[in-house]
Length: 168
Image 1 (cartoon, rainbow, N blue to C red):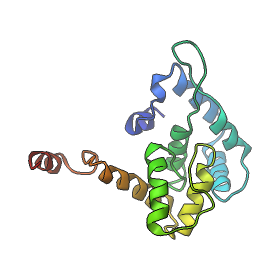
Image 2: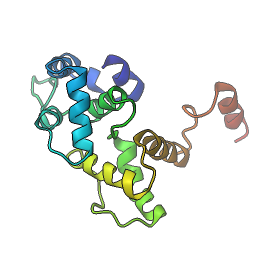
Image 3: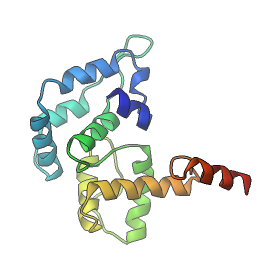
């Protein structure tokens, strides 16, 4: 969880005891159980386990209040646990989603994405876009926003990036 949090900047480590509480919540289930529940959820079946994990608040702010869920970090954890076959929810996905449905000329059931509906929305997008692979869908959404925002440091090698900066 620490590694995913730091690589993806989910900010969970900035909450007091957030990583620890989330780790305890996840540790109640085996990897096999979580993979099974994740697959159910992606296939539009109910999962009380994932519903609870996604709606629970983890960690405390500086005033000792529990305020935030960990949807982004949990989705990334499940993405890796399932062999890249679970949708990732984060700010780049929220921005990319309406652009992608417009670009593809899709008629989805949903026109916005939230931390509550993201699995259903991205599962639908994965299907109607005919990408049919959450790893490819995530890469497409993520890279589209990195390119649009001229954020090349995570895409290009150090040498390529420095060359690009110097040519501006």
